[in-house]
Image 1 (cartoon, rainbow, N blue to C red):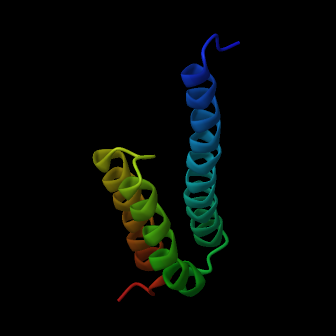
Image 2: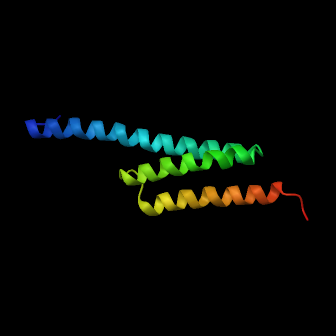
Length: 94
């Protein structure tokens, strides 16, 4: 338990911030999972249309400090690579 008024306020602030950070992180991760599930199901077009939304959520989480910039870049890079692989596999061999 906090012992001073300022410590009580810090506790309130940190709880609020934790919930906010958790929401940003959850949104970004859920969108990443949705893209990956669509790719696994072979629905490349839907995954491609959802990718900008996932990028936006990752960028927003990075902007507010939930993800480090390199972590955000890694997530986006992995999604892009998986999409490229799925598109390559979906194309008929020429």
